[in-house]
Every structure is written in C-alpha cells, then in structure tokens.
Length: 256
Image 1 (tube, rainbow, N blue to C red):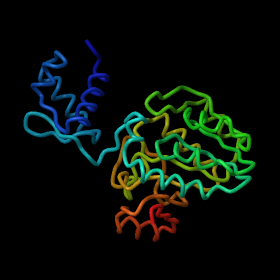
Image 2 (cartoon, rainbow, N blue to C red; image 1 turned 180 degrees about the horizontal axis):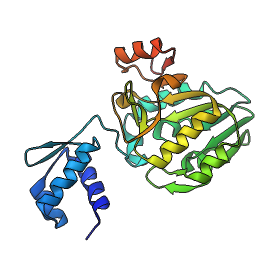
Image 3 (spheres, rainbow, N blue to C red; image 1 turned 90 degrees about the vertical axis):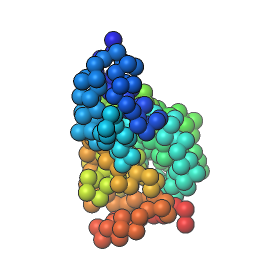
Image 4 (cartoon, rainbow, N blue to C red; image 1 turned 45 degrees about the vertical axis):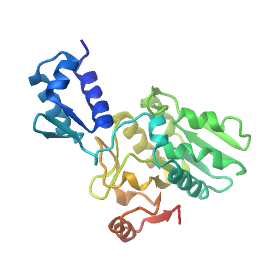
C-alpha cells in the first residue's frame, strides 16, 4: 500500500488530468476507506489545490501546481519563446547573471549565443547542458540535491555557494504571481534557494507568461514590490499592469 503523501500526490495528478475526482472512485482505486479519501481531499482543499464538492472535489485552477518541466514547456510555448527572447535582450556583454530553472528561462539559454564575456550561474541542469559549449560564457552550476520534476538543484550547499558571489541580474522563473500573495512556488527547497538568488542579485526580473497571474502556491519567494522588472505577454490583466506601474516596476510586454 502506498503512503499518504504519495496517495495525495497521485490524487493531485488525477485532478490536473481530469478536473474532478470522486470519493467512491478514489476509495476503490487506492484500497482505502472513504473516510481516508475525504481526509485527503480536505487536506488538499486547505492547501488550495482543490475545492471540495458533493461526493468528491474539483481542481482549483488558480493554484500553481508542481508539474514536470516537460509538461510546463508544452504550455504557451510560443509566448514563452517571445518572453525568453525579450528577457535575453536585457543581458549585456560582460554581465554576471543567474538563470533560475523553469520552462521560460530554459528558452533564454539559446538566445545568449553571440553575447560576450558572460558569467552565468544556474541551478538548472538543462540550462547548464545548453550553455556548456559556449566559450563566451563562464558557466557556474550550483551543487545540491536534484529536483527531478524541474531538472533543478537546490539545498544548503547551493545556498552557501550562491552567497559567495554577487550578480548583476537574476532572471527568476515563476509558478505563481499574485498581487496579494506575491511570487510563490510549490517546493520549499527551491523557494529558499530563490530567496538567496534575490539577495545576491542587483536586479531581479520575474519571467512569467500571463497564465501565472492570480495563481498562488505553498511557498513564498518574494513580495511583488521587491522585484525590479517583469517580462510577460500582452494578456496581462490591466489592473495588474496598473498596480505594477504604481509600484515602480518596469513591465516589458514581449509580444507587442
């Protein structure tokens, strides 16, 4: 029999695929009582993942889930490419930058071809692989434990390594971007590493397509007012645009 944490993870996966789940069906599927399943759904609702309904639960579409990087990369791919190009254009020759893991920041890596004398620190294995043969980039990769879903590295060793340096620019991948809740992510370890990245960078740019707006997740990274720039697309809600301008945050619309 699988443990509680794994069962709840599988229920979340099923919610993402199907949109709804039924207590009776899950009880049979996992060979546990309906009382246990109701407890699972109640816990998921408390965490914001689900909304309970009669006989089951529905997906909370405003929640930022921890999906595999391959799945994230298929969503809004053309928009993410435009955002990645606009973000990469902010990097100047001689810059020292951090590229956070993520489906949009991953698309920034090929756009660095032709730039000179860069220092790039990343916690993303796929970004490191992409940049490894670029002789104009002094590539640095943080050490630590691997998050297989995100192809990223995190942990105390990564945080300690980052604190030894100072960078011109950070390009921060985003799971949830909400005016009230701030910038959030599902994984506590990655959130802590992201907070350290923000501490050691002179400029913090959040990289997010408009699907991330209004979403929240478990772990806080930073208040919205603490970033310098947002690179996004033209579907950004008008009230978000106005609020960000009021906070003095530079907003770049990549597809205009």
